[in-house]
Amino acid sequence: MAELTMTTFLSLDGVMQAPGGPGEDDSGNFPYGGWLVPHADADMGKTMVEIFSKADAFLLGRTTYDIFAAYWPRITDPSDIIAEKLNGLPKFVASRTRSTFAWNNTTLVRDVVKDIGGLKMRFGREVQVHGSCGLAQTLIENDLVDEYRILTFPVILGIGKRLFGPGVMPRTLTLVRTTATSTGVIISVYRRAGGLKTGSFALE
Image 1: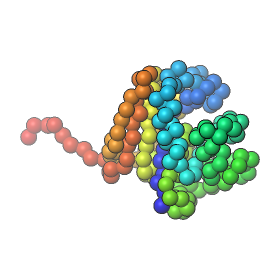
Image 2: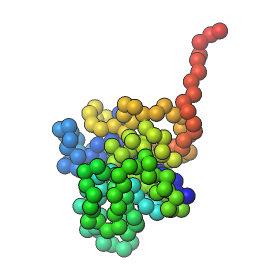
Image 3: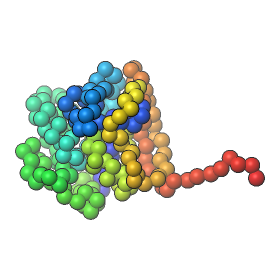
Image 4: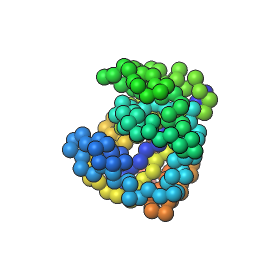
């Protein structure tokens, strides 16, 4: 059975909105689209290739799907691992507003919480979530993410959609590994470790 993994680009204050360019997601009058681009480097590229190489399928929110579908089919270089994976592998879209999708090998998922178990049973390695803020929060709230890959960029945005929003389930995570890129991006991998644990430094 596959694991559900989530890869997210975050600012230091937890914003994930529109990292790749202006116009990617302007909702809420977000003015900082493309905030990760000045910090992209070969280290980040290598990490993303490693992540995509593990994918058997993708689970995406509709907005991220639309962004990907407008870009990746235009990348036809057979040596581009990310394009090869996204263009060829099954893609499942969580959407309440659309039921048909033109990009190759795309299927609608209407109830992601109900259907994720069966989806994972169909594959052997990873069903990967990339971006997809609304979908990500639904998965987090229902404790469905097996592994988080979080790339934290050295920027503070102050506004925008955040990965961990209100209603998130309190949990404990285990840090599997962490590395830094040449531009100061911290790449951290976390896995679920059960419910939240608390303690006290109070003197008895």
